[in-house]
Length: 442
Image (cartoon, rainbow, N blue to C red; front, top):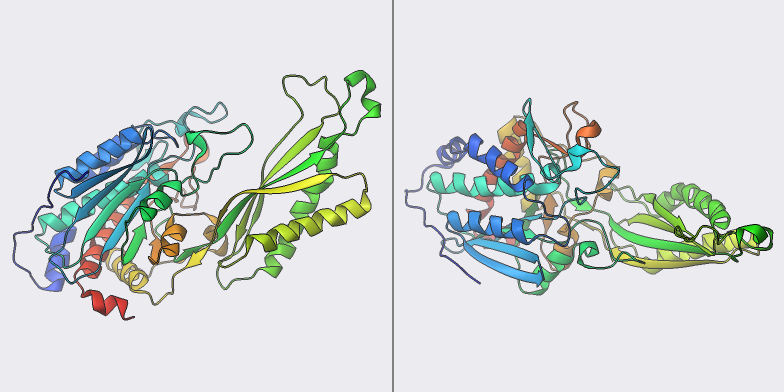
């Protein structure tokens, strides 16, 4: 429910360059850094996003935005803050997800993957610092900068946090809210009425501008065997052994898949992400009666899921011709389409200009493989909102693009956060100061 009215700017308008300068000078580096640490220190695995949602709501309320909570399900809140403009301008959406890539409790991940912020040599380490809690800190500071500079925006500015973005989906024994990701929060938010003219999502692009994403499919291939007991294993058929040529064929298929589905700047990828088979609690059932292989297949915009399914079926048919005893099944359990925003789109041009003004350099567009990292923008695109990703995360202290750094886990350069925050503020100033008709006519 709404909790407050937006704070009104009080100063008179100034020239564009002077106003931009005033906005940039209003950045409070200490508050920005502390806000990010506060966010990282609030655990928010998929399915348990309520506490961090309440924190964001409090911060948006502090800035005078009208705050709305959406209870997606128990312990899961979408949070929407709205700063109403004076009228006539477009609505700009700043969005990010609350849930972290991992839970922070995984046995095989080190202490750098815990929900505890550590600052060291100009970097902050901790679960979610890169993906993507830094975006919330940047959005909050950008709003504060605009307010301190006395900006009166024509358009509305929305800052929102959503649950369930992380690439995951219920399958097999992995059921429950902790597995309901894949954009479920944004899908709920858009389905329940939120809309905008333009959107910027601060995913960890490494200060690169990404005007699109591939889609993706989660697929499960199951091979079936004939179980026995270990003493009579020679009478059975091993489903795990049957899976080995399937896995090899999948890996060999990727170049052909990329040749078939081509795009000017996106490269579809195929990943073998997990495998399981048999009964771990009773390995004396041998050979294993089943084996599951789990795939992450990224798709260029507009790819039909059934086309990819037929490709997989044809691959398995070829293996069956070589081994008539192969029994294998295909199942899809998550699908998101890809999308792209034209380079001449106002939101792309605005972020390009803001990045150049802040850094003195032209913005970089990512390498083709980076487009395989999903974002909620594809769902927003389905609802008619052109959305791009641009964020501070995704660069490590050695200058390489990547979310993790050695055994320290996620990392975020404070200078990169400052840069992204300034870009968000200038892009909001630019886009929300225009007439809506000027942008929608393009």
